[in-house]
Image 1 (cartoon, rainbow, N blue to C red):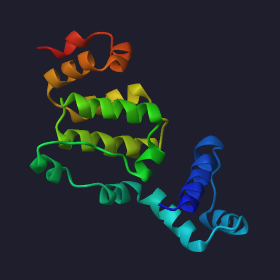
Image 2: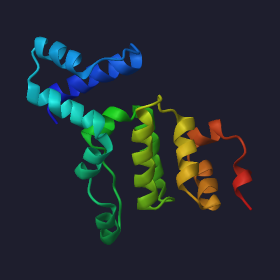
Image 3: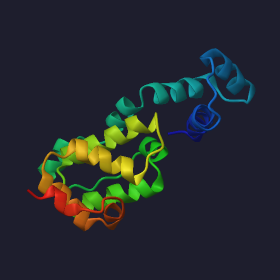
Image 4: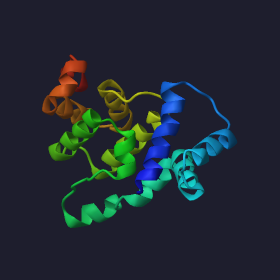
Amino acid sequence: MKSNIIEIVTLLIQRLLVDGEVFMEEEIVMELLELGYEIKDIDQAFELIYNGTEIIEAENPQPKQSRELGFYNRVFSNAEKMYLPLNIQGLLIKIVFSRILSVDEYEEIIKRLIQSSYHELISEQSLWDIIEDVVEDQYKLYLLLNEINEFQDIIPDANRYLN
């Protein structure tokens, strides 16, 4: 992904989330053109913002392919890196290496994290909330809590997941 597109998306996100500005698309396009960005890059940046999860899903290999190979090693795309804070990326990598969750569960968690990043700042607690929504097996939740120290700090009672 071109750095100009990432810069434009960063500017748009900053104006929306940090500054809290609501803007008309035409106004921001004119401002970006005045800053020297090309219309093609501006269009791609808006496409990424409006259809982010579809673009991200298209960039990543299909989970089914990973299952056929017998292993799963997940690398974040540039778009995912933009939406997911570094500490959350680290936790997601720990989750993959724990091999507790299925590929489908893991991919669904990433998808929901990115979708929720449009509306809120992603934290360890919000990651755990999404994991609880996606993972139906209580024993897997218990194993995750015992395997990943960061979750132990925010969820004090791991035994509640044992029946």
